[in-house]
Length: 63
Image (cartoon, rainbow, N blue to C red; front, top):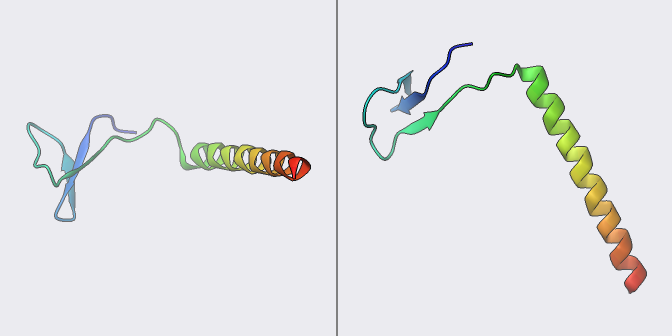
């Protein structure tokens, strides 16, 4: 995977060199493949859902 910072201007992506305009979208590629990113997102979603359910259960007990 390539390294560095890239810029998207007017729908064209290129390597960012020098000062970029304020409206340009800058991004840097991750050193992860798509399956690793998806796995992390699923894990985070499950953890967040569990936390929401636990807090809802605690709030229901108080009422």
